[in-house]
Length: 162
Image 1 (cartoon, one colour):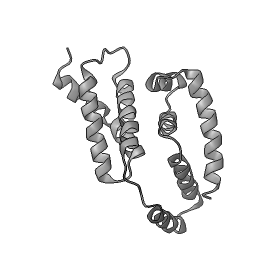
Image 2: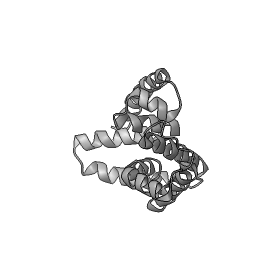
Image 3: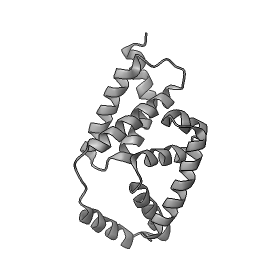
Image 4: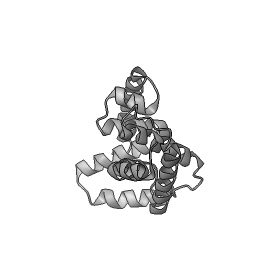
């Protein structure tokens, strides 16, 4: 039976996963903290059922992403688009071409669905399609098809921000 000490040690070793998910799904600092706590709570609730059939990090990614997607859908607070546009315009005036392309890609990713964002994040973390499949609960073939579609969509979407 896993203990509280085991849980704390495992979380400390893998907390970067939770931070990455929080940063991907939430913009506001307080929202990130709330999501972090929600992920920890759900991980603790499910820790007793963790059988070790997958790596702890894989299991934690799955818990974190599922929690974030649910939290994201329930979040009724909306970012003021005019405020965001003003910030982006100010930044764009002061940065080099490479940074402009990065901003364009971030905006394109923000337009993706919650599930597609999760796929992109795992892909950018260099997880294989098989590993992504295990985390997301879909087939590796489905991951490949979705990633090809997402890449095409991102190329087109990013163009409008350049």
